[in-house]
Length: 442
Image (tube, rainbow, N blue to C red; front, side, top):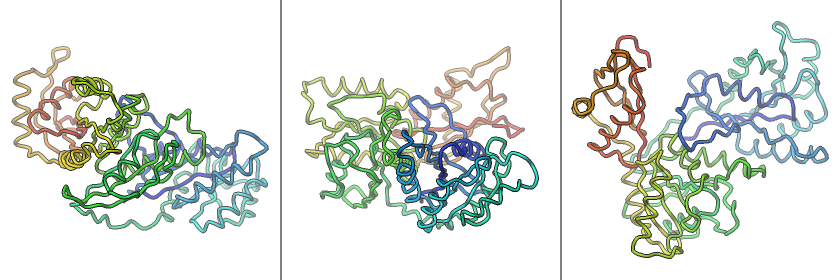
């Protein structure tokens, strides 16, 4: 089940991005710095009162030219409205109600979506000033006074957002259904691959990059099992994302990754590895999804007896930060190795959901520490008392130690490699949580 979407809209210079950063920073999960991962400020995961939702900053609403301000604003606002479950209209106390505020308010009212009016820059504590009441003229109900810069009123705003979120659905997981997101930069053949797997023209295919704008779901059943295939819009470099629709395509691709259990990272064999491929892969890695790298258009590459081995070695270097991901060379056009791809998807999904008993884990830990002694610092040596698996998707292990700062990254990688050698865990990232025994600190 995907998270509800909350869009922040409004005219330029009212403090939308400041408010977005303040709300996103309240309970945004801390994620380790992963190679190849970029942060896009348009999108953030938030949590308030044990309810998770996605927050979108329509920062691109600001026009590049003053003479097209209203048309640009309408286009951006309509895109935000289209997918949002709740809309927050941000206005500016200091400039008061202007014609553009009224223009956007009318547009939002026509949408019929749940709507909140936020009056930013109410920086003084206490009763709002007299000019605050002017915003009732927009006809959007009671305005909520907020200071994005200082954080005043953000709790009240989040409470109001919480009240308008759609009711939580029961997450009815079909254990047999594997959700697969096909991700990659534009024009690598994502839609062609899905059409090949399904055996029909399910998705529009074109040589024009950016044909796919929405994530498209296709459920299939074949000899390998049942799959929900999610075709996503290509993820471009941030510098190339100028078109308003494309900004929301990126958002939808990220949300497709969140919904999926397995991510197929598609690469164009005729172009080879690019920095953008690394960034796309980083999104799936950071999300903890089962991953595999599929090199498409392999039929178009001139080959000799060593071509595939050399290409595989180079890709293993390029994707060194996710060395666990298997690599397969396919052709969506001819169907080459597509059956093998389906087998791999099923395999890495099972690896991502693997659960290992505490007894077996500690046997491996004992063997690993006997082979390579834990590190020490200033006469104090790391002691790992025991290890247990806390969760799956991805496999997450909790290590109880005497001093967390002694458990260096290099030794964590060594322990991870020993666990992978014994249990496999191919195609899935692994997470470690380090706790000091007795005080509960992580």
